[in-house]
Image 1 (cartoon, helix red, strand yellow):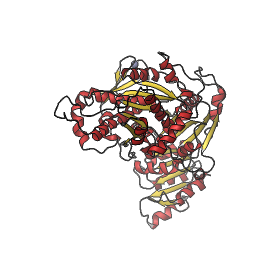
Image 2: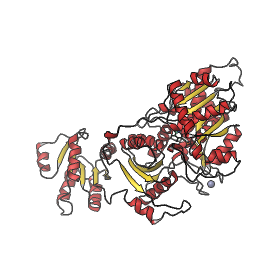
Image 3: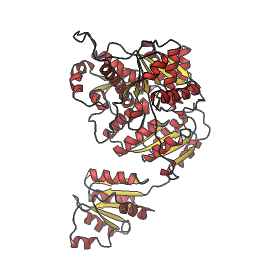
Image 4: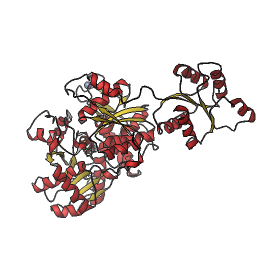
Length: 559
Ligand SMILES: *Cc1c(COP(=O)(O)O)cnc(C)c1O
Ligand SMILES: [Zn+2]
């Protein structure tokens, strides 16, 4: 990848850094990635020819320096399925379903998570906060687990419990906030600020928007493969790829479809397609600020203060500026916004499952109910080709898998949404989220991989405040300052080795009683064993970390 970020407010161009969210000149959070599409239009076709069909085949158009295969879960490359039976029912033979349920965590948020977590990992993030209506937290949790990033997932208490349990299963901290999604976002930012943690901008981040483009790229490639190339392939005017007449997606915040639209725009600029599809954005009638504002011809969206829908995933009451951007896109492509009731969505869910064998979550069914409405009202013509995004289906873990204490509850006092600074009540509510003090553990090892492995194993087992040192001298400094509850100590290290560290610890009354677990790859001599006797809690051979013994040992020492 090579691109710059251009501020859509002041035009300032700046290099991309995943954690820098604002324009350096005007502080705007609205910046767009710009690539050298001219060059890519020549180089990309050849590169693509030899790559597997997954999200990373478009890596030159994604904001990650070195796609890391060890974080990947096989994201992207979801099938495009012809909806033969729906087609018969509706009298439209060319309806295709982009089946995003088939992503690693069963929703299109996998693309966003895969790219965002990869970018943040490159930027050195190890702990972060995300606010979500469910699916973002699930997807981020899976990828964060692989990347060794600790995640705090703030969700509204209305998110179905099955989804919350899925988040918890991946090892994220679930924080259930009573209040609207907009209130959850405010609580999450306050928490991140207090604890000085990186807070994900979610769908608004450049990595998220860029990831969504891959849906457009894939659809164009897949439609082309399905239809075969036209008769006039020799004609140099024939575009490389084909596009549908319509692209339909359910909308909450609206950043997803905005990213897909950017993908089609880039294909058009590279000359790979000759027309963008009309964009149809569908909302739930009980929370349809975008649809209602568009139908009224408003420049700025009128927020819905109290969403009235059972479909929590789509309950973004205030789309903010996304409305303006999306409206421009819909008008430019002669698309539409439409809303459907919850009942219509649930009915569409049954039709889709019973006629096409596809079990979608209610938020996705909203898009299908929208399709039915647009075909019946004649907006979509019988001969037109339609691609509809089946955005998600979540498989939940059973209740008994997790035990009782898998979430923390935050009850927010009533706040005035206009207020910029949170009231004391919010602060007080948040103060219960994290205990005063987590058990503190220092990992002393000269290899980064070993430290990371131990950190992950510990994090998968509970909440710890973890310190790391790569040699004995550094370790002593941190131990004297932090007074950890446990030291996990390697023996072979530069500067001062593990034996030397032990000698120093035992020489001071301040540190002599701190428990130590020694981890070593070395076969110890009898003399070395003698030296450790009485000085340490236990001795572990490297490679044995996952043994229950190690974890039991840690828990016994800490609790
Ligand atoms: C997030 C989500 C949406 C809405 O996407 P936005 O980009 O926020 O508009 C729709 N369907 C499902 C299943 C989702 O997870
Ligand atoms: Zn700017």
